[in-house]
Length: 177
Image (tube, rainbow, N blue to C red; front, side, top):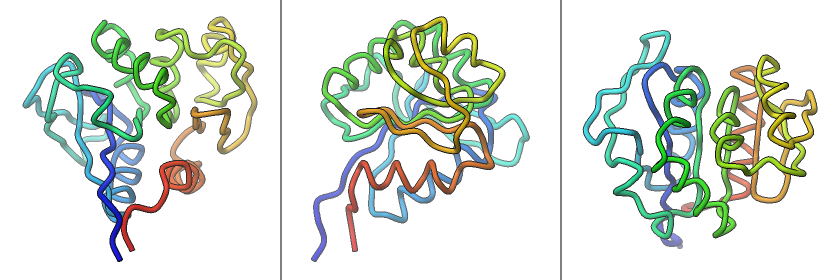
């Protein structure tokens, strides 16, 4: 028996870490979820920093409604730096958090959460190079492969993708079997 399809929003801009997009994206689709790629421009061709993959955005953050989604994923690399400068992206993340949606951020992804003011009192991990930024935003940094604190799921980088994907799918729940 198949359950209803769950929608997941991937927040993406150019320069993302290729595997941090591809592996969670593929795993969530294989798990029976419907995925939208949300960016700063609709129909934008978004290239990974290693150049191994390209995705096209479905919607802008201002067009996307957090009520339409059951989870948000923020891959790392250079993408979060661009995303955090878009007020519509920050608004989308804040509203998703207010709804209690699982928000998974890997590597530099927590930069978006920091800009959205979501790290105060939260325990999380990230790429070690942004530890000071995480702590300045009120987060408690720990060096672990994956950390779940409430609705936030965070990981350090590509080496942690299996744990990151497992916790994201666990939080979202199985869609299809």
